[in-house]
Image (cartoon, rainbow, N blue to C red; front, side, top):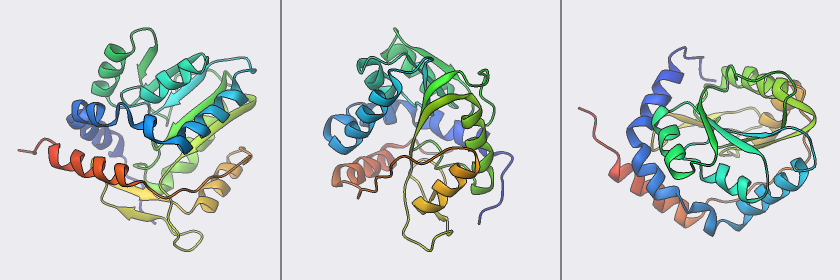
Length: 217
């Protein structure tokens, strides 16, 4: 398993700052052609809407999922590590709140959220640091609140986390049951699990992101 990297937050923020404009352009409409992803977000909205408190989109990027949840009649705001991503989200969705922040130490009181969306935003976290983030998310969720956690899966043995070369910066694939067990240890209870194959469009857009990523000098 990978070792904890005290500089990974700086590395990830800088990497996404560097691709923010290209990323926002390529993925702004990605949910339009992902019916399973939309179904998960719809179920998440239905579960959290009756509960008191807002929903946080943690690792919101340019804010397209935040806006999708807003259209589903949720009181939602976004948080992201990348200042450039937050600037794009604020321009694209000026009616919504977006904050620069980190999941390692959320600037939120205890038990304040009805829900948290963590959609592919844990994938760059070194595996030893993931339990603390899950514990932090549990801290800010109100009793009965829900977490929707999206990540890239691997079918390696039950506890084998697989590092791979993500188009933006280094990332990890998790065995679903292993990550679910860590969530349980943090105080979260699994309600449902969906494993789906990546689409051809997702692969194509990731390739475009790599091709259009600014070259480092």
